[in-house]
Image (cartoon, rainbow, N blue to C red; front, side, top):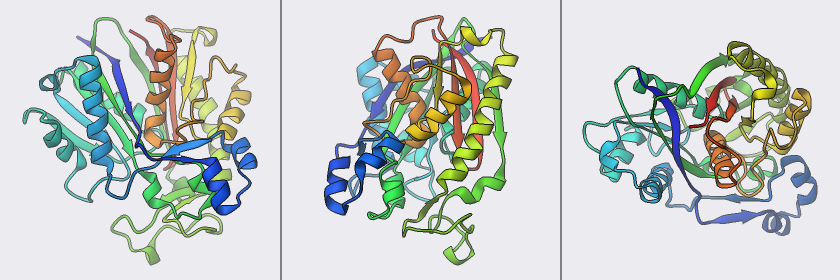
Length: 330
């Protein structure tokens, strides 16, 4: 039976770059203080006529071009997004057509945020290891900026738009393993968007605390941090306990890049060094489901991930939802 692994990755950012200097000059916000908390200096933002399908197609075309991948070899397309082009049809179908993938290609969207990449890895692994597909194109793409009011200081300084195309392919040696998942829907009121689903605004989820901004997106940062610093270390312990490795054998802890403040709290809680728990969000912001593959791509470029390295991948956030696994680089 084949195993599944993370193959080539291609990242696409919209051309429009929004800087802290621009926001500080426009709104007189204290950007030094904001940067200290977020660790984010710039974000990429879609234009008015640019949508998730556009970002996804650009990322996939870059993947095909840069890595010499035959698009006809793709058996399944998984698209993780919470900002689809339409309520229906599924955006994955639009992307399949625009990419010219074979009509024998399976294609579906799944709506999940910051833990979505790990969930997508699990689905792709299942497709490959059960013989239903050989090559799976896992795409993560978000345009959260469309949910954020221009004067929303708390959210506009955090979220950036991006898409990442990741090829999941078969390998002889085990690679993706020890998946653990968790859900606690009681946290749904800490991060949600109104006016973008079937439920009207007057019947929507109520914010856990006072809603300060006009954005369709609401986020209760302190509650999310409290949830994360409890759930993630517990999840990491579960994954390591299920694996054959001791904690010191884990090369990197690759976590969802929420904000510097949250990541520093996790790093301190788990007593990890900067080298073992990289923070890669200064020049792109929180790109939701794309943060983990962006870190992987950066580590590969820097030569910091080598074949045989054992890494831990952990996503967490909206829902509340969390997921993690081990990834032995191949």
